[in-house]
Amino acid sequence: MKSVFAAMTAAVALMGISSVATAGTFNTGPCKACHAVGKDVVGPDWARVAKAYGSPEALAKVFKGGFKPEDRKIGSTEPKFKAQEAIMTGQYNTLIKGHEDDAANALFAAVKAGKI
Ligand code: HEC
Image (cartoon, rainbow, N blue to C red):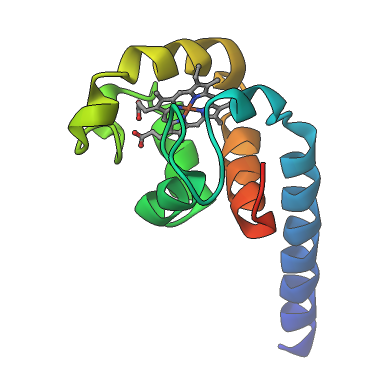
């Protein structure tokens, strides 16, 4: 039992390390043109985005599902951003597709750091 617990602890520690590493591999630089942490710019405040999704896993799931407008928590509920969904679809297609987990982890890491 003790060894099972030790193995689980090691696995969790490894997962922690890998999630930090993958967050670091996604370049959020281009996102800064339209997003910030703490205020809406062209796109919604990432702190609000993180709160709406709750976890990087939940956001990554919506990214992996094709980032459909009806699955988006902010765009599907706020008329101002709904009108701009196509802008974000373009960003998704060029920057996020194929890097869904890294992008979601990077967004949450930016919110934790307080800046993109
Ligand atoms: C050219 C401007 C622009 C850039 C660059 C941009 N976004 Fe956005 N983003 C928007 C707009 C506008 C919205 C609101 C529309 C929407 O939610 O679909 C948005 C919304 C979002 C949402 C919330 C979706 C929702 O409605 O729940 C996420 C997550 C997001 N962007 C992530 C990113 C990431 C990650 C990057 C960088 C890879 C990025 N954005 C780059 C304009 C941009």
